[in-house]
Amino acid sequence: MTVENKDSAARFLDLTADYLAGGYRRNREDRAGSPPPAEPAPGEGTNTAPPSPIAPAAGGDSLESVAADVARCERCGLCGGRTNTVPGEGVPRPLVMVIGEGPGADEDATGRPFVGRAGQLLDRMLDSRGRIGLSRNVNCYIANVVKCRPPGNRNPQPDEIAACVPFLIRQIKLLHPRIILAAGNTAAKTLLESTEGITRLRGRFAEFTGTSLTRGEFSIPLLPTFHPSALLRDESLKAPVWEDLKQLRAKLAALDEDYAALAAGRPL
Ligand code: URA
Image (cartoon, rainbow, N blue to C red; front, side):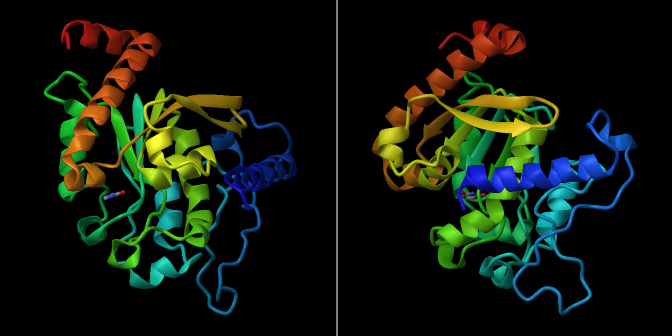
């Protein structure tokens, strides 16, 4: 099933829940009702724990409920090897949502995204000595395509990505960042449903499109760039990534007045 099909399935469950609860969604927080039926995960149905819902419950979605659903998810084999799930972290109204591939050993140990060497480099890239001025503490949210560590840091498999991506879609809808920065092959190819690799995709703005009940059809500019782990392996990628960050800065300045003022005070 493609990302968009998963998204449509989640939307259908969402709409069905709204319909059953009395009609058009105006204020999900005020509505009471049964959650939509969740697809059983492999092996579920025989134990008493409720299955992890792939679509938000009828009472309205939140970052906290995504994290709670991720924490009890057993939709793919990655759950067997995890110490912690790694849903994501950052501010709730971010200028930029950075999306990586999946947790590594440090992230699995802490439950926090991008805290190892690649994460420290990512933090430095996003700030770039104030010239880009982005940080997970101030104006970014950082998440991954898969929320559990693939063994040995291998690439996540298509079935693992398919199982996990609905959580990411929920996060994107909740956060609605001004821009998505897709770090690396897995994030760029998954979000753009592209067969092209990161070397061809990077440095060109594309659009992530979806549908939400509150916004209808929406589209968010998405910039693919190299993953910070790739920069740790190959220093020559620093120059193209700097070009990408400058593009990110220019686009953000065009989209957000406050960021434009910040950028104007810090010439490149
Ligand atoms: N690499 C990723 O893609 N994500 C992390 O959270 C850490 C390393």
